[in-house]
Image 1 (cartoon, rainbow, N blue to C red):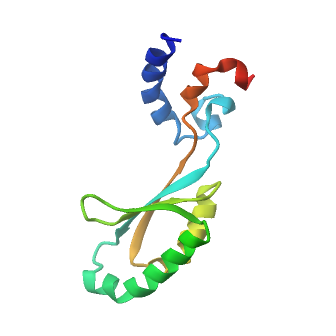
Image 2 (image 1 turned 30 degrees about the horizontal axis):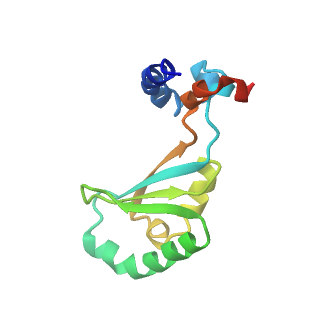
Image 3 (image 1 turned 90 degrees about the horizontal axis):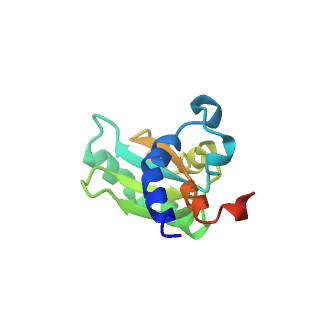
Length: 135
């Protein structure tokens, strides 16, 4: 067991590079690709959008975002540390599902934000800690 921790630590950089790619395109076996359990959504204002434009929509945005949270669609939400937008962890099984959820928000409807979608899932190298359980 004491050898598993260094192995896991050595595999982390590989796992972080491998996750965004599809199994077929990357040559990674499908069993090594984590299932998507959520989608990280990073939103920043589009170039040329003013703070005043965003603030005009914010009251409706807040109400709609709270509703999505209470409905279980948004798991977590954060302001970016650099002040340049927000980050959501959306309860979705795919990027398309998350996009469908986020496009219901007023800022998205007004085309004021750029959104980056990153599917995330379990850290697959953790399987090395108990390989017999996954066969």
